Length: 119
Image (cartoon, rainbow, N blue to C red):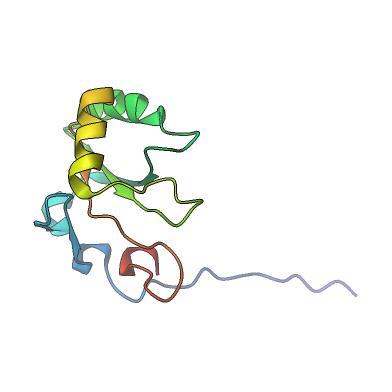
């Protein structure tokens, strides 16, 4: 006899708008400021095969910034592809790709120090 199995997605433990995260300039980002807009969080790194995505992300942001917020989240946990300091990351993104969308502080996306955004 066949019994269907349905997996339920785990309910979030808190609203995205209640999660604290700092900008690359170490200033708090109030995610509640973006209620009513779509928010796209993107893991980013300056020494990654996907680094050129910064250019397309910037185009996407410029096209839809009235209804879409893009937040780049640097992380150095994947083959140490983001070793830079906050200033180095910010400069790299601006100089090479003209990035104007939000960047956060460098965070851990897995492990014992996983940022609440990824829980």
